[in-house]
Image (cartoon, rainbow, N blue to C red; front, side, top):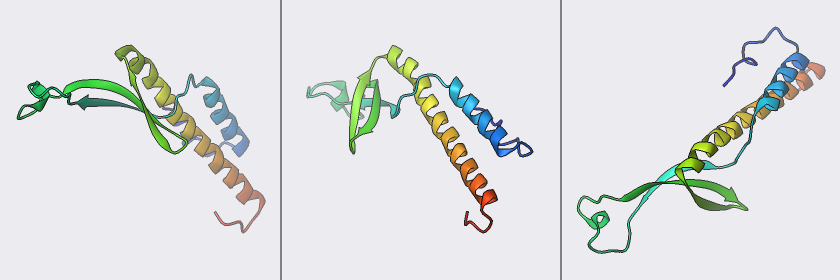
Length: 118
C-alpha cells in the first residue's frame, strides 16, 4: 500500500487527485468479497470428524460475497485462492483510494464554500 497521498500536504488538491488516479490506473483485477478457509464434518458416524476431540475435514478455501443481500459462497482450489487473494487486496485498495477521492472533493468544496460543514 502506498502512503503517497497522506504525506503530500503541500500538494494542491488537483495534484493529489492526479496521484490517486494514477494509482487507481495501476490496480490490477478486482474481486469483491472475502477469501476464507472452512472446515467441516461429514455424515459418517465413525469418522474422525465425529471423534472427541474432532479432527475436522479441511481446511478448504471459499470465496464469500453478498449478492442482492444474500451471502453466496463458492469453493476454490488452492491455485484459485492464490490468484484471487491479490484481487481481493486490489478491491480493498480501490475502496481506500475512492475514499481519498471523496475526501478531496469535500476538501475542495469546503475551500470553495466557506462555512460549509465538514
